[in-house]
Image 1: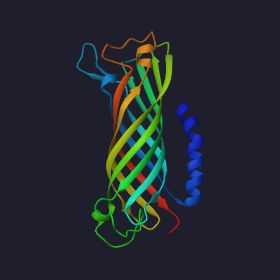
Image 2: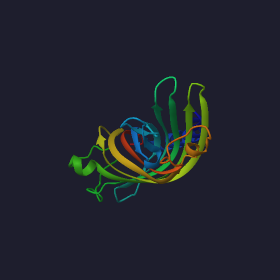
Image 3: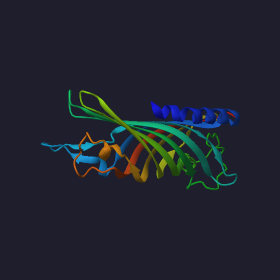
Image 4: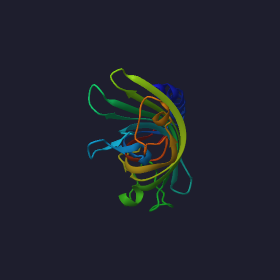
Length: 232
């Protein structure tokens, strides 16, 4: 859990800061990914092997907004983990990719930009769709920690690399009270280049020629954020 050791000081600082300001949120997500250079056809079969796998992401954010326009900012620190198991015992190949992320999430309430909603938690009357629907734009930076675990002898290869990204998604705020907001969301995140050197540099594990160290990565995410506003 190397990524957790990297993330912990940042999460502690974020929680301390949000505790003082009392406007924060926690988000959990399910992740699937597309990385064309990290995929190949299994030998003697039609199965497509995806080295990146699926997984989850957990993040904490601090919330603030523009005064007279419904554009809101949620700088976020997050941790993710994705795993894949290839083959069967005793000759399995297992991969794990952990990530420590900083995302500058920006929510744009395009149906209610000049609204007077007391958000992100709200009790004022008004059309729910107009008040709650938002477009999210999210530049970010991620530190990935890669692990490949190979064969019965369990040879392990570790590596790490950083990458910039841009994300976009649609979400909807459900304001249950002046204290809590629940926000389901669907989004994707695009990494122009992520480098996984161990796919070509281990000298022991041999992948097909189409597998390269560098790949574009698209993450597809279904998430649920619980927002707290304790200063009302």
